[in-house]
Length: 198
Image (cartoon, rainbow, N blue to C red; front, side):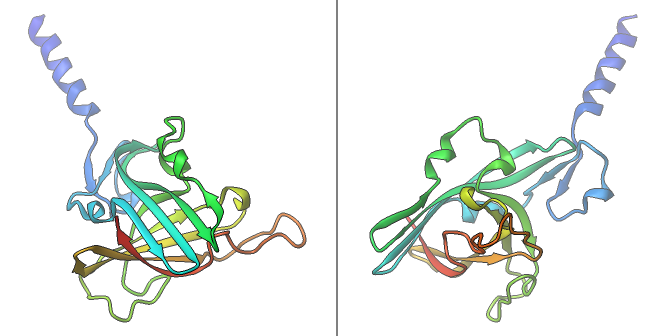
C-alpha cells in the first residue's frame, strides 16, 4: 500500500510541474499550464530605471522582471513597469507609485509584456544587427485607456558606460475613440527616446 501511495504522489508531483518553453514559442503549440520562460535572460538588460532628458522634457521608465506570472492559462516571464513624464517643468503623468502596489499584477501595469520582435516588425530598425533582440510592450495612459499604444525597447549593445536603450512609443492600428474630440495620442508623445540607465 505504501508503494502505491508513493507512486501516486510522484505522478501527481510530476504532472503539476509546468512544461518550460522559450518565450517565443507559439501558445497553441504547448499544453495549458506551460511556463513561457526567458531562458536566455534576454529581459534582464532592460530592467532598471531609465531616463530621457532634454532642456524641456524628461521621461523616466522603471522596468522590473516578474517570473512565472500566471495568466489564467499558462505561466510566463514578464517585464512590467511604470513611468513619469515632465514637460516644461510641469508633471504631465506619473504612474511610478503604482509599481509598488501589490494589488496590481502582471499585464495590469501601464507597461507590460514579453514579445521579442524581428528587426523591422512594427518599427523599422535600419542599424539593428540580425541577432539583436528588441522587445514590444503594452504602454497605457490611464486617462486614455481606449488607446492602443505600444513601446519598443532596444538595448544599445555598444553603449555600456552608461547603459543606453531606445524606447519608441507608437500607436497600434484600430483605435476606436469613445467620443468626438477624444485625444488620439497618449500624454507621452509618440516617438523615439534615447534612455540612459540611472
